[in-house]
Image (cartoon, rainbow over all chains, first blue to last red; front, side, top):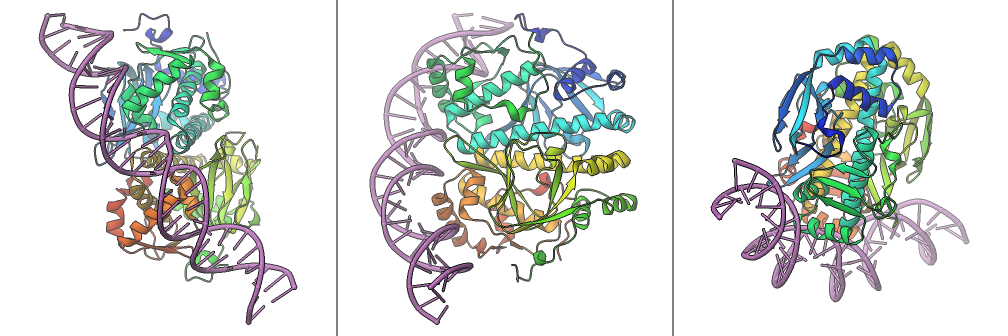
Length: 253
Length: 253
DNA sequence: CGTCTAATTGAAGCATCTCAACATGCGTGG
DNA sequence: CCACGCATGTTGAGATGCTTCAATTAGACG
């Protein structure tokens, strides 16, 4: 569905993407690369707004996002939604299921997406064979926890303006790290409602704040594309310091 | 300093406490217990309000909390503080430092505390020798991430009343899991400012909301002690469902 | 073209914040 | 053992960032 100049239309193999992601997290040996290549992965496509994991599920495989965009979310009693994370290609949104049998979160697609399922058994065998690979994945969940901390700071203590700017900075850097950005432009098919639910705001307020950010000439956002017009300014506005992302290398193309 | 009837005055060894904590997370074999017992640990005592880790630090050992109470926090530009997690005995607040060289958070004591330092090298050797133990620790960081998600939901989408009730429920269950609760009573030397900074509120509002919660006969809080007077009611008020804590067993004494 | 979703706008309300006192409790030094 | 001092808790009053409700407009798609 892409037809943009971004590379999202090419849908890499699950193995390739995992390697790319892990490579952005730490060093990979040839032996580890080989082992990853031998993983069995079953491909699936889903439309936008499709639940992939539901609270209470007990998955027996993990899911690598190959293309598109997903999020984790939870619902509160009055029906409101809190998105707790966004997931870009290379991510494994339900990795927790490997060691936490019952899911405490939902995962859904925010755009048409491609996924690959890898059985828990295959992953555990891989970790048995190559314990250092387990450490690398673990490192990944530690980085994710760091992202959570940063989100808490935003939701708890930052203004709507700062919060939104920060989110955009984070997504751009994360996309860059897996080679899915061209400069400071990324494909980002987020709805204003999605942004609101991620940042603990109302859509109305997101809409108005977005106008302010545009008026400040920091970004362009529309038709599923985000462009940072003024990267420095955006980082300042978002009080963004990318240390917490612990990215090994930034690979733009 | 305790002299309460709670068991916090007895300060278990780091090894014992780790075993207790890991036991609340999953199954431990005798062999694993033995290996944990052989860990070297250096003991330290700190006063309340002492920084243990600072943003930017590159620790070469991890810290097990033996007694007392700690938190992770981050500061925003205007000086306001967001607490991102509370840590009770058995926790390892700086575990991320094992795989993330530079700390993206601060850790400080909220009460006089005892700590034990275990060198990274010792931990990594342990994991090399017993990969399943690494998986258990990993499981621990996944549970922590689940707690983060729940906090995000609270800060983003729940009222002050619900948020505070939820926090109390969580702390009580966590204390129970490591045997530090007597029924629904725990030692909790939190300041109203601490609560405010953890939940993204102002101290004034925390004060008023606390009065409401007391008036609803749900809790007693004072002199470093929290009592859930009406556990069911508190859970309802906090929309608390403890699934996300993934506790293996609840051991009250 | 109609239909549906997403974006936008206006207006009124409120949960929570900020500012500013004041009260309480507790450790410490005299 | 009293008095001071500092941290913590409490209260009042006014301000505001953000929400809610309720339309309206703009885009995308068959």
